[in-house]
Amino acid sequence: MYTEECIQTFLEKQGQLFDEPVAENYEEAEAFLEDCMAVVVDSIREVREYLSGMGADVDGMTEDDLKEASEVFSIPDGTYLIVEG
Image (cartoon, rainbow, N blue to C red):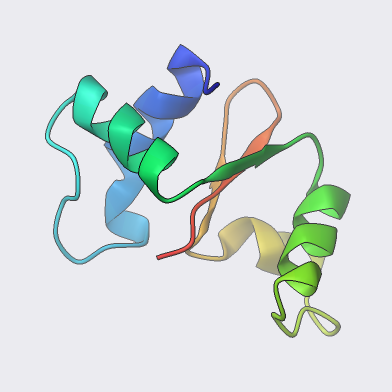
């Protein structure tokens, strides 16, 4: 369900959302993302739509604000991983 690049990015950057690591290795990171039903979207527009649909107030947020949100992880392939903490 999640690409290797997506899982690795979350594993390396999980500190942007959590004070302490939730995963120590690749397998734990993959299991965590599956357990919390993290979402991968193709564009920052889809990030906005997803967060808005979940009740977040994103009306005044710029694209840069959305990219810097702690629950949004930019994946090198151009997609975005959204993890609710």
